[in-house]
Amino acid sequence: MYVELKQVNKYYDTYHASKDISIGIEQGQVLALLGPSGSGKTTILRMIAGLEIPDSGDIIIANQIVNTMPPREREIGFLFQNYALFRHMTVFENIAFGLEMQGLKQKEIKPRVAELIELIGLTGLEKRYPMELSGGQKQRVAFARALAPNPKVLLLDEPFAAIDVKVKEELRIWLKETIYKIGITTIFVTHDQEEAVELADIIVVTNQGRVEQMGTPEEIYGAPNTPFVAQFMGKSTEVLSYRDLKGFQHIDYGSSAIIRPEAIKIYKKGTLRQFMSAAEEGVIERILFKGNHLELWVRIGDMLIYSNTDMDSAHFSVGESVDVLIYRLYIFDHNTTQVVENSKMNVDDVYYI
Image (cartoon, rainbow, N blue to C red):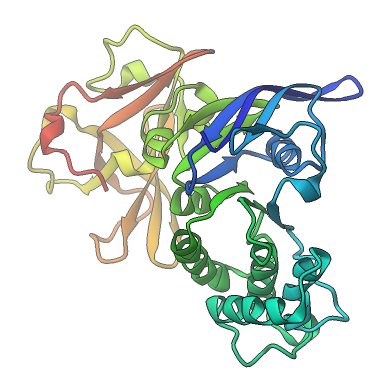
């Protein structure tokens, strides 16, 4: 592992902020620390940066234990949530700041800064001040400044939190392409699942100071190990009486279940052509317009679940009786989660929407 935490603990007085954290990534990988507010993800990032000192355990970067090493000696680039650009400095001067602190001469600084300005696509804006830049441009400048000293590791704290939705989507694509182009090992904090899934090679889900699960985006979303991960990832419906559902009633495991919208398909009466024995009868209670799709809330007995459907699909109305296919459940107890397919369906023929 290029960056690794081994049994790391951190206390703030009596509060146990990080509990036996053990994670790691290889050189050149991108890792997302994903979790709700207060889950401990930012504490982990700050300990890697050297802004916090662990009370026990080891933090290793490039085969060197760095527990007590000052931040400036760790060769880490840090992109703060608010960018922390110097308002009185131009784009060029902001990017050059770290290089000047290293004692480099102008003949070494100028080509490096020019290279980074071209990398972030802001050629021609070298003399502008932060107040003259858009939010996306400020983020790019902060990114270039973090990269300027050629760090071993890049740390990003909620890198898109201060950017509007449209610009955020464009910047995510740009950042991912840029990180892989330069091949820098990157760790970032986020509470945005879409952001983590899109950018990261590895996701670490944190909760109450612990690591709930670590794995690829596919593993985290498709095979959650714990009840928290099953409920946290995706937008799901929790049901208690899942044994009443067709194809799931004989399962003797767990007390609750999660149904995700992509594992549900809703059909107008008379249009379902297969898996009739697995179909539930439902009534549409709510239809929400979401721009590029509709969110349908359907009641099946005492359960209210929802699914997404595209705008070009059949027209539904509130109060309409429908047929509902539920392809899979995530069934869990207090400690474990199990993915269960509908036993009345041939899963090889199922198309997940």
